[in-house]
Length: 588
Ligand code: ARG
Image (cartoon, rainbow, N blue to C red; front, side, top):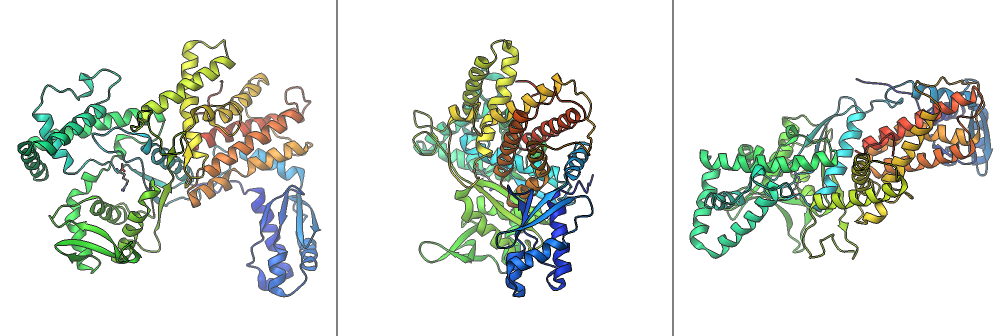
């Protein structure tokens, strides 16, 4: 459902400055009003400086003219002062601030408009590989992609969560042959103990198959024949492959449930899905002159990127042996997303080492005409998770860190921290809180870091109650809920828009008013850490407010107004954490 939302105060101030510009200098009515929050007043406009240059006038004089032309009669802006070289310091009326709080509180969406309404966004994320364990390398794509899916979805986009599962390739022929020759080796979920997942069993079987393939030529032959059988659609082989995919999907589902991400079986649209589109995709690329023959292989030679040998970078549309690989599938995928899913925007959430691959895919898609300027496309690249030694995160023994183990560790840490703070909690309560806070801590540590940077996985720091952590924010939210319970504030508080407004109340109200703008930014630049940073600042603005403005003991109408601020804070924190995919328990 589309919603126009509540216009943020910043937007109203910007509109008032724009009107003033149009009045003073009609020929520059298009100028940016350059309004931002300020600690001198509520907002500051820097419009006069660039504008003065444009019209050849001293900035202070232009600033003065603008100031007298800003409308202060409609009850929003109380005062405009010129300062320094021509800045406008703009103060709002108290009633405009309270009205905004009331309007946001009255709206289920907290007044955030559906700015992405009607746009179809395909987000390629998570994409683990069948018959392999999900490991630390799949964490970032899964949670960054999920947060973007939530934010864009909330803003009204029609989000397609495309889980590009690695479920196809010659390795499955080998694995199937190996499994069939060893009917006694368990790998189905029901045959395994609860600590071993089917993918971990399959992972081991695959490694063993690989070893035999390398050492036993007759097995290698049988394995190759099995690849041919799989590709030719031999019913028994295909049935076995399906079984392996289904078992792997169960194991992925268990991780998704635990992580609390939106991905469901409906979102699996793996590499195999594109299998019967590969030939047509290559034909179209060749017909349109984008792909060419190179020694029997069909390749796309980049017009933009050169490799180290100063030759054009290559995308392999079809291999010399007629086989199709990762490049081929991504070409078919982008074609399908545009032609059949009618995507307006495509996001690929993978680590930054795949930057060149996607650059080449996008270039090819543009040259062949699938990708037009009307369609947005981004490789949402992210950095590496590092271990304490500053190198890519590994187990002590040097192996890959299983995602489940990493989550277990964080949950165990939080359990200890919370148990110490709340000795009265029952073991069951403790389990629930530890799970929500532990998973939240891992997600928040990741999402609060600038996406393109590497970061160090530090379970101790991410589960701390202090500083910019998920646990801190969850506590902040739970504290507001507890105050609301003590105040007996079960229903929405009535705001007296003529009530007084303390500086700390003002700060908090203006912070709350900025929520929609932050979501808009996240949707544009695809950086969830901006939302994380916003929530952290909001929690701190709330703390300052609470330290200087008693809520429960205050007289009316101050008490109700403060309860309204608490309610709006609790709901904004809950919604914001939710958009990072993090739970906001009422009690901790
Ligand atoms: N399955 C791949 C991996 O685990 C990631 C796939 C990313 N998506 C894509 N369309 N290539 O590394």
